[in-house]
Image 1 (cartoon, protein in one colour):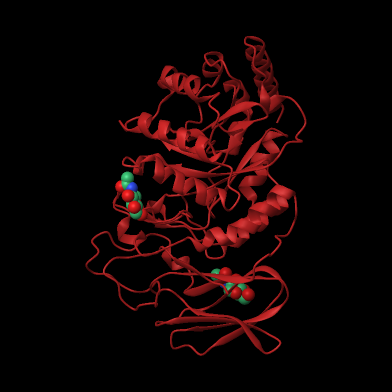
Image 2 (cartoon, rainbow, N blue to C red; image 1 turned 30 degrees about the vertical axis):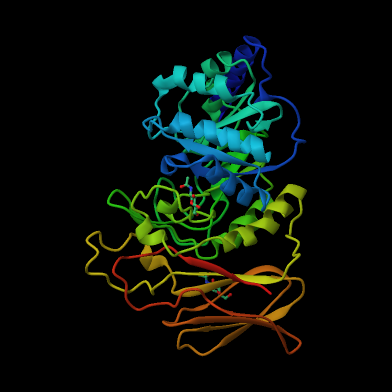
Length: 433
Ligand SMILES: *[C@@H]1O[C@H](CO)[C@@H](O)[C@H](O)[C@H]1NC(C)=O
Ligand SMILES: *[C@@H]1O[C@H](CO)[C@@H](O)[C@H](O)[C@H]1NC(C)=O
């Protein structure tokens, strides 16, 4: 503990010295937390090589519609089209009054890339569409924990707010020494660390550690609805289930400085909330993401984003609806043609249909899943996630109040007892009036 405090003091001293060295305000280590809250979404630039300005505008407009303030533009160093697409993104954002910032993906960038990263920051830090936090241009990362932001700050004529992804909250103590201003966590799903798969439900055990270690400096918390991936290089699920609402309840209780939704368009890991963009390039994820819309999760996220920004502990419902999500098959379905085999972790999943009710007053939700008889559940006002046992066949949903049916509809996909490939992505739909 004493050693840690000394490290932290030393880090603070280094940070102050670095700050004195150039005319920028060191955002992280000064001033009270009295600013607006912002919500960002992680955007994979690596799959939009062919995007035109209109594609960017379509995505940004859809994000703005639910209260997202900016895209965190995940960029690899190896992609030739990164400069072109970044330029388009900044231009599109400026046109629609949206914001963006760069998230350097250190699976590709390295600590030796200071000059290139500085050049990007110098180019964009004071762009009208750059996301600013307390007057400083936000920059973030995926991994890249040990990158030193000091030289980048010194080489950029606009203040910078570095919010790198730290893989371990214990690293916060040496973070200030690298001139970081806060931290971003990637622990958006239940895990004991790394990519270990544990039973749900999700807790805030990781968030609490980051918040504690950051001691008032900005924490950018991750919010994600799902995780299922099925590549040669990675083939697992995290146990999400009721995460689409549970995670937001945690955020409303925690009220972190900033939130980054993971993700807008990462179809590969099945956590996209953006539209299945017609013009993205397929990294192989079309096998599990085609025909599996997640758009209704934006309807679900919208009232939570508004609640988070206003500091409310509960979302306000303007429009009654239900949002449902379920996998296309029970977990035991075997796919002998799929040479990759079943993803790790699936045994911890339950075969359930999940339904979030968004209601202004209590009502009764009835779900008929396949050949299972209809199940009725009394649900309160607000947003609540219920579940019923998955049955093979069509899915029907209704909500009634005082003997009147107020919402009624069919799931967009029947559950099947067979599939060519393992698919642990979910079909997400909504029923509205
Ligand atoms: C992108 O996709 C839409 C269809 O969703 C199409 O109308 C548009 O022309 C496409 N843009 C480009 C640049 O291909
Ligand atoms: C399904 O709902 C029941 C009853 O509310 C709850 O106990 C259970 O944890 C839920 N299952 C999942 C996987 O969310």
